Length: 289
Image (tube, rainbow, N blue to C red; front, side):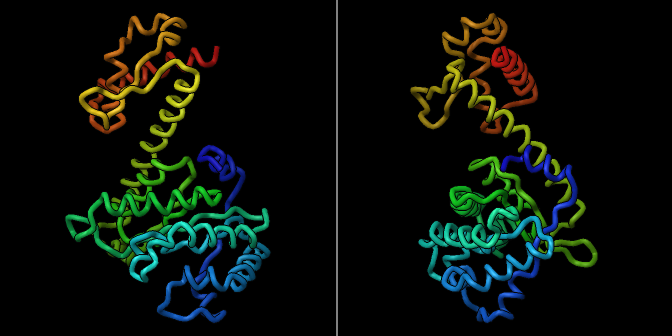
């Protein structure tokens, strides 16, 4: 399911989620203090029955029990190497329970570790951990992602960053707050919502741009090249085929398009971004012809 498809579904009316899965599994016999992801994978029947009951009661979305199935959290149980298998197995179990009657969300949550500078968790380590889990969830065929019971806005944004790197799945976000609106890891829900809203708008724009670039490359209008001096930074160039289709390249030469690589790396200024949008708009017109 794409973000656009999810927005269309939301427009049709409210979506009812499931809830209290952990509490109900404890009642069904899951021990405390163990890796719940591993236990559920080995004892799937309680979850299947529970999620079938949720759907019968009206849930439109059930959460695959991948809550802490990221390599950092699984690592505390010595199971980081099982990240892919557990995510795949748990999604499969939930899809079996849903049987096409409800959407299945890949559940992601906090690692419980504060990010720098307040804590010791570096952005890149957390990003790679979430990216690995989200890749597994996308491979397993979830319909959407959910960042659940997050403790701070910054770690939630890491999930959004990782998701945008991996797939175009919609992402639901929820944060745990105190009665006064403060978040457990600092900040407050009001600032967090503003930050996340801005981030989501940027991600939506980036997703549209990314899809446009993909279409342009598939059509052979632009190509990606690496500099002889920098093998890590890719630049976009108009191909001869692209130049033959229009006089756009006369107004926007290769140097302009090369700037897109800097933009995609988050290094361009507003003027560069405006130029990039003009280029893309012109080539979108060509694709429609």
